[in-house]
Length: 587
Image (cartoon, rainbow, N blue to C red; front, top):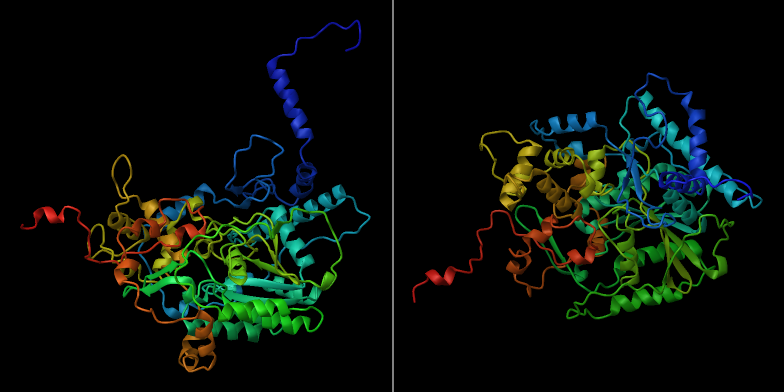
């Protein structure tokens, strides 16, 4: 303080304002950039428009964590989606009380219509002369304009914008994986493959980057073999430059039991210690070997697969494996740019890309034959991409799950696992979509809560399931409809209730597919073997584990192996356990 100046009182309120101003000054340049761009873009939107004037005004951040340290990066990679308006929520709740309109099998046939006229954000041009701040500003400016244009196009066409990733940090992870990879694996769920395969990504990787691309249709154990074969033929015909591989992380030898009740509910009990899914791993190896030729030595990978296929079944091992982290490197360099060098240092780099919940991390664990990355049913569990060395010459890069821009209905995206079920504000639209294509009433053996002759609505189905399961509200003891809807959606996500879409023309080619020679190969990859009879059926359909399978006691944040032994009681089962039964028996 200069001499001769009188001290001025400084109140606590002024001190808070000073600290707040200092904190804002230290904020990232992206915030300042977006603030400046708001004025540039506002001229394109009229004053009387109902459209959000600026990017970010109607964005919902999923699973935000409270931070004690403002410098923490915990929330750096959180999922960001557009939030439904109150008007949309009211309309959806009113729609949930209307009766179901059942759809035929032909209505479940689908192409790539939802991706037409959609692209995805790609990294803008850069050079080594650019500083970190220039790169950051350039990418933020590009991404802001991309999302603003996306919002404006939907508003002009009177279309509803589906869930899509709005976090630039997550898109940067994809850019980094595409830069590093020699071969890009795009992984899709066998139940919804065309909804998870953006043609714009295929075109960008094969044409602009000039890299190899492999489509892995995962979770084929949840779908019948005819449907899997039909999807394989569909992608091979429509995308000739892509290699299609069929895969399941849980073939029969990684399960302690797999049964299907007469109602159609599927029950899978996973082993604590998983083996390599050798059938699928062999396919991936064959494609990679053909791509690299003699430029990379893949002998150690081939030997590893052969040893696993010839290894005896270790049926007695049932211990949870600890996460092997010493071989996993989590990459956090956003600005470490480098030109791609094919097979750098004699190492083949395989990038794994896909939507949330398609099983990318599970696939890596199945290929490795042990748990190397953490998995969860919650979208956004993988925060930033991870590199895992399969062998000394093969490196895998696991990219976080990304929801690409499309016009896919939000109710269907929930069933795909693209949005956390626990965060849903209105789950009944997804229940309607499921119930109109599957007979949930018979599947779950439901009884109408009011009258057997009444038509069913999504609310009625949830009420009936809540009554059947004993889901009641705390105060008034009314059926907990929201909890019941949450339970049904979790069962659908886990594959216990299976809804699978079909390629266009499937109903006409179904008979031909049943005699196709490729069907045998599909079943071999599924490793479908008969139950050895060592397990009692009552063990797989126990009453004590019924609560676990519904998945309502948690928010879905637990890892998959914590749900490994969850089972399901068949609807309508008369088997009950009464601990006081012996008291009434004659002596």
